[in-house]
Image (tube, rainbow over all chains, first blue to last red; front, top):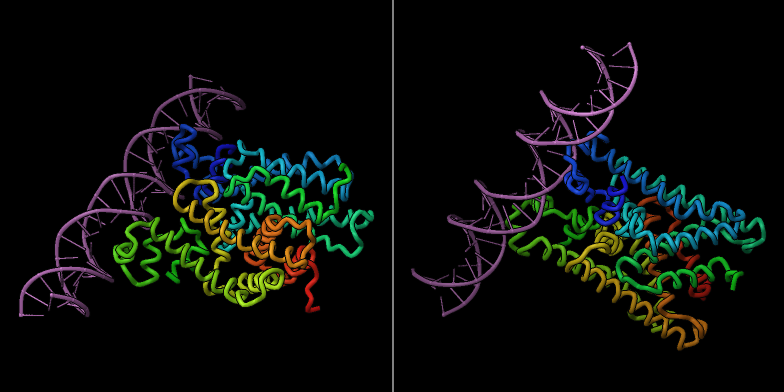
Length: 188
Length: 188
DNA sequence: TTAGCGTCCGACCGATCGGTTGCTATATTC
DNA sequence: GAATATAGCAACCGATCGGTCGGACGCTAA
């Protein structure tokens, strides 16, 4: 599964091939397929494994922070670290950005799964933003969904900056945008 | 070429297949390939054709606006329209978002072409932002590259919102984000 | 000891991939 | 009217695709 996630992050979930995966793992195609039954099942399992890694790297580190703005900031910082340093797990960049673009114009279980996971994450972000508004850490007229929407865009830009342009200062660019979106960081 | 662009926007530039394209066009594979010689050449030509359509739909309408913030606003509005209504040319959403994610982890002419086109557009956006700062329409301490960076992210989010979630209010969400990024629109 | 089960294998299937070859039909040009 | 160039075709190539099949191996429980 780990190698499948790595492969898919580079080649896409459609480019994740039974033959290629089997060769890399020193197995036969039938041996690999036996565990899943179908390529689509393999793709879905890969997506779930990737989601678990995302939760572990981005959500878990922020879990202990106080709900609301502190936790939202912790999420955003872990998210930057994830984009910058998760090269071993996701050598081709964020799997969910890739999968979203890959399946957003098709039908089927894959598209549904991607939309479900993306929607879940968006709701998580909006939930924290809502708590931040309730706590008075964000302006009263803030739309939590709007915050979540802009955050997602910001991190897709970060993914492109790192993967396509190889920009070293991409993390700081994102932090600057976060300052404007969530207010300056208190640690400064 | 038109049909190739439409196909690639749905299936990706790699999913753009000689056989599929030939069948849709009522031609033979050899007949299609004869015009390009190589699949990679077809992909590059498709990318260029898509870029021409993008320029026509997003850049041309804003060309007559005054350089700086007015033109930047005109670009952003045309860009939203492009995302919302270019379903005939790009039924699978923005071709450049797709291509960027598809090739950002690979090597070769396709990746170079995508990076070149994306970089060009980023520089165009930054150039207008810089003019806006010089004209006093944006704060003095504004980083034009930062504006361009955040704009690109914003429109990738818009592309996802339309294609993956089918959200009808996606354009307005983007306009709200633009208000915060470039200041409220004067037309209000 | 044996039966069953999970894991994996090599061999094979039809379909499709990108690409090559030799040919024909239609224009254009000299 | 002959020569040339263009565009298209059917047929075919080796490779790879996802998937199927029968069987071999090792483990565990009866």
